[in-house]
Image (cartoon, rainbow, N blue to C red; front, side, top):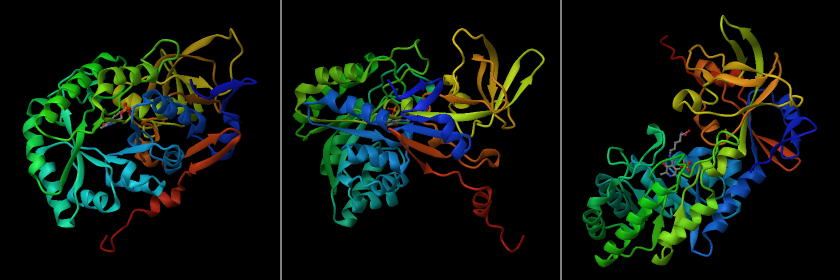
Length: 421
Ligand code: LLP
């Protein structure tokens, strides 16, 4: 459920009409619903109760500081994958003890910043990283709290570009070698073992792969404890999928996911951490765009928008589907026509949808891409010298620009022409 509904024939974000925001901000823009974000966070937070737990929002999905503050103020932890993300989370007021640091390529400099600034744990992904972290922490006179990310060799049954839990993927250490690596971690200076980490992929639409991975984590917990390690935390990653096509998809609900976690891992007396990104942010955001032209091709009709692949890359990159709806609702029973929905960027990949049935639209009409809150704005670029798309947050009848559109002058002024040219 989200808070993007038609009222009086106009699509609203909570209590605010999207055409009003468009008139004030211009198009394209992202808009997020604060109450949808809150609701999704609570589903996990309440779903895991009464187990001791921390829901760490995977901020790679949506990293605006205003959103991080909103969730952080509710008690959310944050899953980060770079020091840039860590510093954003800190800027949003999230304390270091609620920030976890994931990722396969943490540099020593990143380790230093996180260790001195305060960090809940590093999710270590390889043996060289473990050795480096030990050296950095020892040099600082600190101990780095860690989990080790294990790769359980489970098929997440999702798009190949976002599956991470098979042995051919670059993530984690093979679960078969876990005891060896934990034994090494236990004797390294500057390292404090806290638990185990796993993340098998994103946009998972079944619980079975999660359950298979978590069973393996439960077995490993027992083995590692028998080896004398203190395992007090299990980080289960993110990955729960969302419905991208209204009415056609029913991925498991957060409640079902949490019930499964409790059933498989609840008896282990561990603090549970999860790292959902898409499920919290995805259906909390829309991309709003304007029709520039309707162009009649030889055998098709193109809807040319002012948003492009640089603003929302998911269709071009993953063949992802986003529902597209008009901001001004069509009268019931009005005919639809098939459009190829495209942006202005100069490549054929800049296609959002093919033969999509939409009501008749004309230049200057507004449309909204649903489910665009996660991996939308964060993956935007300035390709074709199109300034970064702005972001708006709505909370009830209040709204604010939380990242303005840069002017062309600002965009161009970042470049430096050396005096020898
Ligand atoms: N934890 C780790 C270690 C991750 O790598 C990810 C996502 C998450 C948590 C959050 O996963 P989520 O709950 O959002 O599924 N750009 C792609 C998605 C990439 C996901 C990368 N890792 C897309 O647009 O579909």
